[in-house]
Image (cartoon, rainbow, N blue to C red; front, side, top):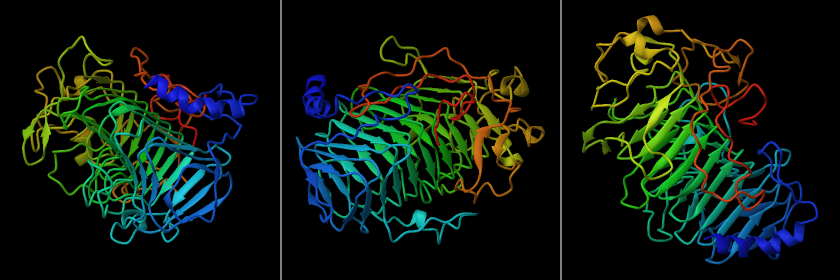
Length: 473
């Protein structure tokens, strides 16, 4: 794998060697714009493509884009790709989006429009599925998405493009190469009908992204299956149908699923899921024999707190997480704590530690969390049992710069609008971060053909750090 990446990047690096450099804060790609192969004409309407979409141009795509095995398509900064309804990007080769903070890339359905204010699920374009998705085959060993808007994806797949996906799948991104590298950094996703990203294996680094209105009446933000290992960190999720981040080892692919979920901010997630209440979480979930770290997160008005599944419910397809100790892999044991949780209602407060509503859970109250649920529930508490959280309502406000709490509109406030989820100077989340664990380092580091940098655990809770690091949106 290392050799194949090197062969790919050498021509491009020679083209831009004089001015290409990594960012000192690990959040920006190089200032130089590189080119791979020939320029792709902005008159193209899709079909089999390779080469470079030139910076600042607008591409109006009317049929599926197909990138063949061994070919690369690179998209430079400032490009807009207007995708017609139900069109997809099918990747058998390599796909690179190199937007920048000042000139991001946009992939969208121009027939759909963003709506601010409270969300009406039945009428909001975000949940209707405009263009389809980006489907990456087992032969896709590298996809890089930096400073890119992916808006209004999730239309149902009409034709199976390769072995793996099924007709009717409606993911904005699908990655299916266990030996490949998936890197998504500093990007945005707005609207989907199911999971925003579904991983069926791969080395992943998913950092500093912002996701709004993900999932219609079900679906997660980042949903990883067996064969997937890596990080989901410094992401902001608001108004997701179910979880923002999930690890699940179903699928029968090696290696075992292991995900480090840390320094994320989850707001108002879980309330559109029409499945059995208590069979899914509403922010971060560890299930089906997967291992994970769940540290340093802020969880506000989500359906439940983070959930370590312990059930064996065939209907819900949720089985117990792996909580035992192992000597193999980047995560030896599932561990969690140092998370701040806020509830605007008693119903939410009663699930800060998820209870056995639909099936058993393994989430143990942690004294390092805010609030200290271990002390609150007492030494005799049997984890999974129901409890009365009335006294926790409205406590431990994270004190975002601009977001009203308590908030009675948590079910329908699913977009950022004019709110600001940075931490104010009086936030109880400042300085409470835990740094005693190591993120998973399994992807190439490169300003263009790899990760811009694996951001370590933060001093503060949540995706925004008071020193300016973390999420850059």
